[in-house]
Length: 393
Image 1 (cartoon, rainbow, N blue to C red):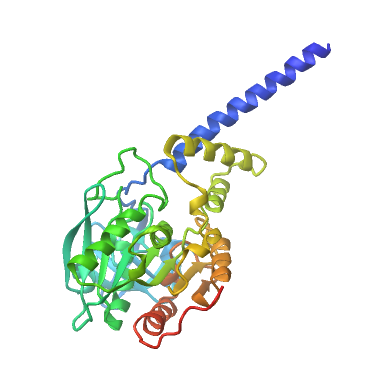
Image 2: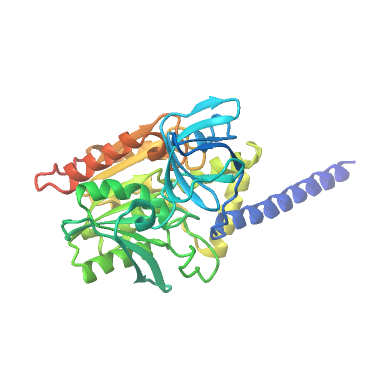
């Protein structure tokens, strides 16, 4: 009897370990798989379009991206910019709209929202002169957009780094502000995005290897454009990549500012949030994530500890001012680690938290506030000779 019980317990444990191993391997795939940009999903319908009044109505519900204060709407033939408060109607959500590209759509046309808003090249959607160039990177040439405002000084540049699975258009929301303050910019493609080479192993590393592409962009600006100082602005994983660059690169001395938008500060906590979003039972999540981490590291060499940026504040140069923005309702990349990073940086950081705002939607939720904070940071901390030096930690 006793022997039978032991066998039963051993069998249950073996099955549990097998299940944990299989689950960990599956989730390690989810962690490591390099992102790919998919085609837009036209999941909305324009129920009314009135070009004379500049309004459109979408069959959207409250809380969707279609109700963000500022957001783009794309159809097969048009790009619209929705700006201002949404109004609920019997047919959906009515919005004030500006035609950015193409022809006004018709009622019944399928549509999709884009938080990038200006979803095209800077010349096409913003009227900003730009050059399409390629920057020599570790894996090959990286597509990039170079935008130089009229009369801009050419010694300080901004490198814009998009997030995981995104692309060059993500940074377009920054360009009007950079144009007003007179800063030239280089939006750089990361590896594993359209037009750039993919990592040979097919994995994405959350900035642990991608930082070399930012290094290539900064090197290009220093050697080819005569840049003396560089501000690095990153979205989500792009922010993790920017911080990793600043912590590791021999070119970090050229960095005069860091702008981190919905930053991935802790990979561990991000994966925990995303596991919960995938309905992984809370009781199983810690063991599953630990197993997945071991497997992912064994398969790829991914250094999880290095991506806990709030634990490596001493590696961030103390004379580099940092602007941090994050939505309090971010369900993709948690805001908690950003709060801790801001506290650890002390006077070196300006932290702006956006209530009720989701991932990389700070500009969309409150465009005026975001652009004012960005312009103020660049003007006060980067462009003035008497900018305050970073405080102690």
